[in-house]
Amino acid sequence: MPTRIFIDGAAGTTGLEIRERLEGRSEFELLVLDEAERKDEAARREALHEADVAILCLPDDAAREAVKLAEGSDTRIIDASSAHRVADGWTYGFPEIIGSENIANAQFVSNPGCYPTGFLALIAPLVKARLLPGDWPFTCNAVSGYSGGGKALIDRYTGEPDLAFRTYGLTLAHKHRPEMQRHAGLKHGVLFAPSVVPAFRGMIVEVPLHLGAMSTDPHADSLRVTLAERYADSQIVSVYEQAAPTELLLLDGAQPHDGMELFVFGNEGGWNARLIARLDNLGKGASGAAIQNLNIMCGLPETTGLRL
Image 1 (cartoon, rainbow, N blue to C red):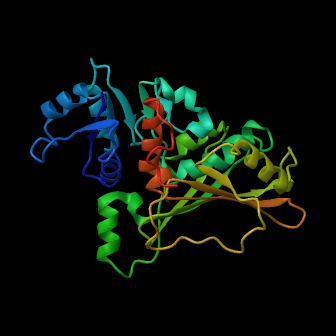
Image 2 (cartoon, rainbow, N blue to C red):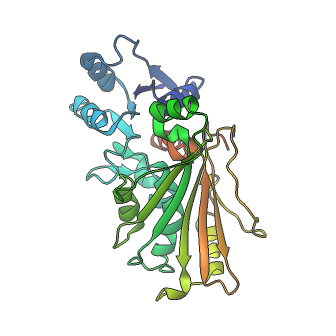
Image 3 (cartoon, rainbow, N blue to C red):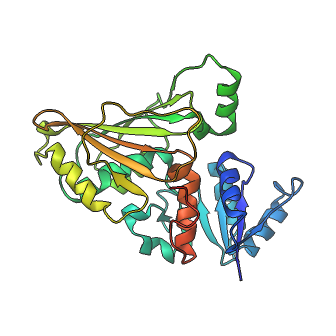
């Protein structure tokens, strides 16, 4: 019997990608509301209670409302919003960091944010291995394709063809910072500088490090080796171990991709480093991660249906 899936918010960018990926899979039966019912509370409650797994692709407040509507049911929930990423009772849905076994039997799973996915993939294993100090004041610089901002930002970029670059989060209080700090095990909040470029999808997340000033006295090569060992068995996360490329690119018109590449660049002596993750903000950064978590929760191979 197929697993019944309800995508609450299936008309948004992330929801549309998830629905497209699941429609051809015989393991799942999609519960779909028509346009008139999509925002009807009673219809949503019924669908949330009928589903085996609900995937929330909603703004934060609406996601919290959906969780309340699902109360009294046994429905398992994957929340793609940021509403529950540091909430008690929720499992953080980053299997490469927290372990697939912790997601497999969880009722409530919170999908990681796109920027934190790159940051945590780089930093969490190195802090855990004590190569990087957990009390270091980390900085994260990142650029994303404009699809990460949803319909409003997509409309802005497609409607203003001269818009070449957008930096934001200038209050220094971006909503991704709490999950970056908590799930990397850091003492201090991350100084996070996000920007948007005129490409539909794709993301580069960078953490620059002055290794020579750290009490742990790490070397860029040791960081690279540790990351390579950490992800050696992953079919999704890869660590670049060949001769360092001279540049990293995001390409306009790039195809959907659910993998993530990690790079460690060091200067002569290895005492300065640039740690970089390249991923698809709509793939491993959103829809692909939700599909991966859904596979794990349903006892399926976690790469089933992924674009790798």
